[in-house]
Length: 230
Ligand code: SF4
Ligand code: SF4
Image (cartoon, rainbow, N blue to C red; front, side):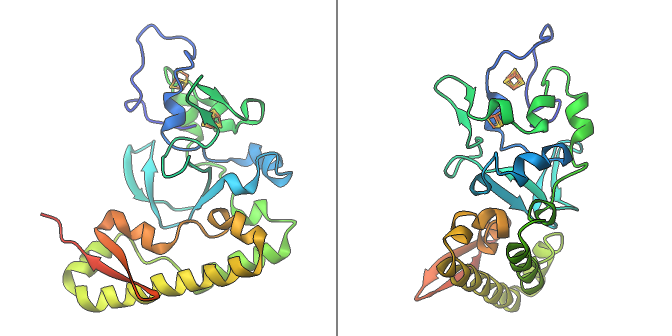
């Protein structure tokens, strides 16, 4: 897994992994080119993957900031609602797929992060690569990307400040259409249900929460509310 030089405090004398497990609690690892066989053969099941779509805001270990990602990232899912990798066993700090763990985990040396920082953001796997033998699923992903492009998160706050009411209405439409699409495809296929987060990433309403846009149920739709900060 990748991480910043500063986020995980290293012991000045540290020269090897102490198996503290802290890196595994910072979010599941991203997959790179060297991991493709693992995913093509589902040695790591697709139900344990999540896609961060291009344009989503995510932590960048190189710049040590949160910003819109340029390319999509396929990662290991967290555990429940936590960031901790779904394969991390906190009772003994062990990895459930140690011999099949992604290259980002194999590379990581928190006391010497240069190698993992060099890997960060490069040679990333995409859904198209992983689904190269699954034309139906690949077509579904393409359809989703075409019908539900992400809003520009870089300008979201400005839009909310300048034309809140109309923008919230537009976002509400996108949020609900996104959910309708997912529910329809999930109802048709147990496989799609199992791997929804890999195929489509997180629903739009969840991506809006960090921007102070909260969703609440109203009848059979979600309504959105912008809670202005400060
Ligand atoms: S790489 Fe570092 S943070 Fe991760 S388990 Fe080893 S010592 Fe802990
Ligand atoms: S795959 Fe294993 S080593 Fe990598 S983050 Fe998950 S638990 Fe940690």
